[in-house]
Image 1 (cartoon, helix red, strand yellow):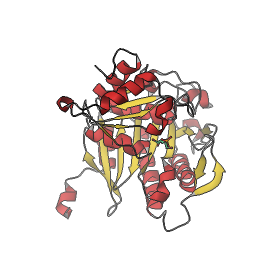
Image 2 (cartoon, protein in one colour):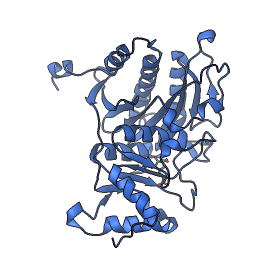
Image 3 (cartoon, helix red, strand yellow):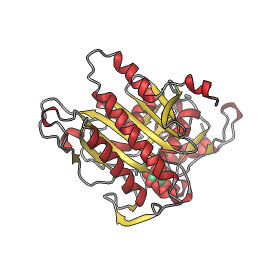
Image 4 (cartoon, protein in one colour):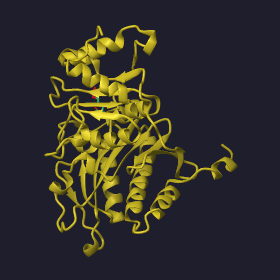
Length: 344
Ligand code: P6P
């Protein structure tokens, strides 16, 4: 793109300030919080692009709270986001996949402590880094309930409907920052030559129907019958609705979600023998992506319930997840309830 072309793009910072100006009472704290997250994302992106050259690939030899082998980049990404949020002063509590407990932040100005809670998966899919597959960061933002002086985990355990913002950063062929505050979904692409996220995907809408689905079919034998019926249905030939669908599953939720958001599709991580509650975590994976997909016209379900209405009781709790194109999620729920069969 020539330099003239760049002049037509709006930066993330300009976008945030314009939105902030629409709310005269806003103090700018939320704008600064989004900026802090975007700065951490740029730093993680920088480190990521060197993973093959410096000793930050592979495992730390530690196991995280999930019982999963912690990758060096997991730990690095976690530290970068904690550092950025602590320095920014707008966040009072962090919940992270990489830390067993919620992390209270001592803000610079105690009497005006941060009023936001940030839940995040610092680097989802990180085991893919050493094989050069896209990975991502996911974040969810809540307001600290008024009157709370000492923020604690209980203040973070709010239903997904209470989120005031949610977003992700996908470190792929390009690095994108995608987020919503409840007024649609907007995507920003990092231009490394100027170090700015530029508005490249305004008002993202997910197609109501897709022709691909994302699932680890290695777990097929432990799927519930209704899901097996749905998969069989998607694999039957029917030119009318472009079946058989394709499977697209790269083992990195943020990347599979991002593709489905732009092209249409359905990501499924159901209850399995190894993960009876599902594998994706409610607070910092399912809820933020559910907020985004609903804002883009899609749906997110546990198979029986709207994800955003699940009442949380633990920071790291897991849920079964069916998320993506509206019609595909509704079809999944119908098959799971037994009201549809693959022969329909
Ligand atoms: P499986 C990565 O660990 C992750 O949380 C998601 O990003 C990804 O979709 C899923 O797990 C992959 O899990 O069991 O299919 O290897």
